[in-house]
Amino acid sequence: MSAEGYNFAYLDEGTKRMIRRALLKAVAVPGHQVPFGSREMPLPYGWGTGGIQVTASVVGPEDVLKVIDQGADDTTNAVSIRRFFARVAPGLRTTERTAEATIIQTRHRIPETPLREGQVMVYQVPQPEPLYRLEPRRAETKRLHALADYGLMQVKLYEDIARHGRVGSSYDHPVMVGGRYLMAPSPIPSFDNPKMHMSPALQLFGAGRERRLYAVPPYTEVRSLDFDDHPFEPLRAKGHCALCGADHTYLDEMVTDDRGGRLFVCSDTDYCGERQAERAA
Amino acid sequence: MSGLLPGFADPVLDAQSAFRAVLEAMSRPGRIQRIPRAPSPPRPLCPAAGAVLLTLVDSGTPLFIDAGPDALEWVRFHAGCPVVADPAGAEFVLTAGRPPGLLSLRAGSDEEPQGSATLILQVQGLEEGAGWRLTGPGIEREHRLRVTGPPEDFVAEWRANAARFPRGVDVILCTGEQVAALPRSLRIEEG
Image (cartoon, rainbow over all chains, first blue to last red; front, top):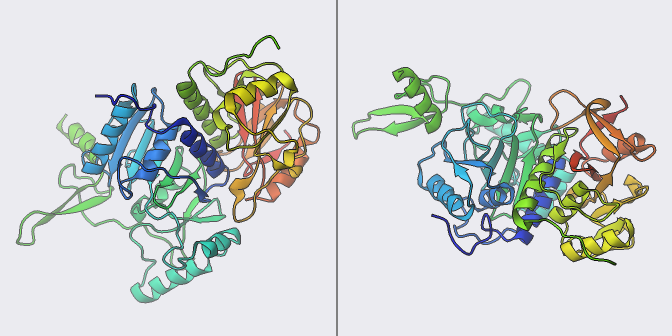
C-alpha cells in the first residue's frame, strides 16, 4: 500500500537538498559531525529518525532496502521503518537478504555477511558525540575535536583497565577515523567495530534528536581506541548458535525457562536463516 | 533571450539519481560516475554541472557563477539561489573560465569544516586508469584519474588545500554527463 499525497520518500525537496549537502561534507571530512536541520518525522525520536532522514535523502526507486534492528529484520522498529519506506517510496523494493540490499538501515548491528561496493550502510545514532559522557558541553567538545585532543577518552580507557583489567566497553567503543576524528560507532557491539575498518561500503550515520550526521567513506581506516599493551579485543559471548551452530557470529542470549535454562542464537537473523537453509540442503 | 531551457524532467527522481552519482563520486574519489537523465543547461554549462547545481543549490546557498547571462538566468530560475559577486562569500562556485584559486574560497573553520565552499569545475575530459595518482579515504590502494584541461598549477594548489585538513575546499569535476569528485581528504600526485 502506498501513501497518497506525500513527496517521494516523505521529505520535501528542500530538506533533502540540505541533508544531501551535509552528507557530501560529511564524506569529505570522515568522522566529523555535521549539524543538520532535523525534521519532525512520523516516528518519535529514539526510533531512528536520523537514520530515516538520511535514508530518505539517499534512496531512489531503483534501490533495494533492508532494515535491521539489533541484527533482526522482524522486530518492531525494523518492520515499521521498512513499511514506512514501502509506503512513501513507490517503486522501492525491500528485502531481508543482506547480499541483495543496496541500502541497509541499521539500529546497532553490522550484518555478518561481508558488505560490498555499491552498498550504503545507514546507522541510526542516539548519541553522536563520543565524548558526551566525559564532557557534556557541546561548545567544549567541538573545540576538542578541532584540536584532535582526545586525552579525556584515553584517560577513561585507562580507568577502565585499572578497574576491570581490560579496555572495557562491550558496545559503542570509540573509534578513530582516518587517524583524525574520534567517532561514536553508534552503539554497535564492539564485536562489529573491526567490520567498519576498510569496509567496501559507504557508511552514513544520522542522529535525529541530536541533529547531526557523519560518514565514513569506503576503504577508510577505522581503529578502535586502545593502548599498545592493552590492545582492543572485540567481545563475543562464548558459545554456539543453537539454531545454525555458528561459532563466529555475534550471539544473543535467550532465557528459555525459569530454572536458569538459556541458549544463544545469532543476532543476525538473515545470516542465521541462510546457514540453517544450507545445513538442511 | 529566446527562451529559458528546462531543468530536470522529473525534479524529484532526477535530483535523487544525480545526488547518488555525486555521493558515489565523493565517496570514491577518482571513479567517474555518469549522471543519468541530466538536464540540458545553456552553454557553457555542461549537463553534469547543470545537474549538480539543480541537485545541491537552492535559496539557502549563495552561489558564485561566472558563466554568462544565460547560465545565470537558468540557475536563478530553476534553483532560486542568491548569487554573490565575490567567490569568497559563496558556498558553491562555478566559472566558465579560470576558476578562483582554491585558497581564496571559503575553507570552513577547524571547529566547523563543513562551512567550506564546493567548487564545481568544468573540464574538457575525464578518464580513469591514467594520469593523477590519487590516495586517501575512499580509495583502497590507488586510483588514477586523467583530467583534461585542469586549471594551471592545480596539483600544487591542491596540495596546499589538502594540507589544511579538516579545513579545505571540495571539488566536483564535470564534463558532459560525467562527474568525479576531489574531497579535501585526497592526496594527488602527478602521474
